[in-house]
Image 1 (cartoon, rainbow, N blue to C red):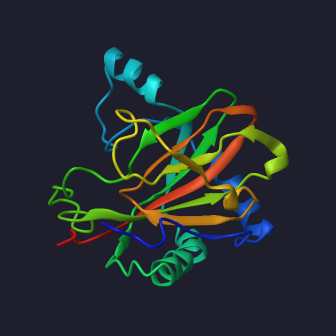
Image 2: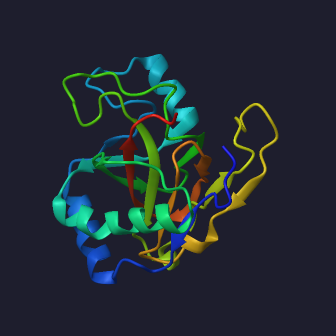
Length: 209
């Protein structure tokens, strides 16, 4: 898919008080070891954990509180319009509160799957795909080093070809929001100092025709 804009950002859009509230609330939740692929209730094997450690290291918590959607979703709508994507979407998955400690990272990946969700017990997700991803920076940039968000605009798997990373420096400031198509390749580089906190969500719609 040819795009004029690969991502759309809003610098320092979320007020510091709201960032504080989200950060406090996220840290109150029970965190779990981040995994890759679809979240389910099965216990990962030793081999699964070894694979995950090579791909991703971070701690996460999940929540779906309406007051947080109220803060974030308007920027998804605005970015979708401003960037000219105009993707149809109608539901947002739970927020992922992510904590990256020193040495933690998330290697190249996309947020989309090979096909739509197939779970009739979850009508909001069933038959739909992730279309728009959104990341909000919660930590002041003075509190950590590294952890840069990077994109690869070639739109093919950078793990098998030479990546051409572009740093999304526009969202380094606390409270900044970036929205991008979920099929875009991206990564979070290792944090080298301090803690980096972010809030991630994925917005679903009908498959592209």
